[in-house]
Image (tube, rainbow, N blue to C red):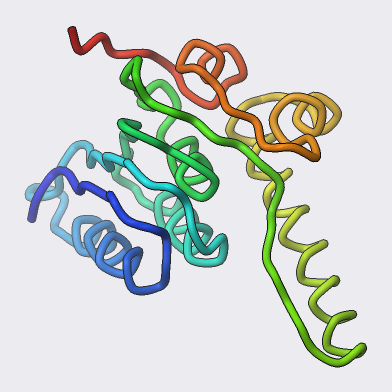
Length: 173
């Protein structure tokens, strides 16, 4: 099995499935054959938060540390997944575009269906806040103010390090 995986697509159940399988298969290897580290390279405009959190849970449950490398763009679910990498092993290239924003999703339906969707929206928002807190070390007030305000937030690689999203910038040239 390979030591690294390149994710350059929108997050969906279909695009995250092979990554989840890759992590699980590597974890099921005998200790002697198991890799010491896996690397997930992310270049993604985002996508479905539920699919991202399935991958994040798999990453966090891995006995093998997972290094994440952000290149190109890590937006929305891309940044959620990127910051789930092992502490000290979340690397960005200097030209990476980073987008952090509140959870969004469109919905239609009858009134009772919309109320049910609002509940899921609340649960997803809480999930995101908890994830940001665990990965960045920032408090909820700072996260809502700087990383998850009402408008989209574009960050430089330096700002991503400053706010605890990334650990280090790797110079490429």
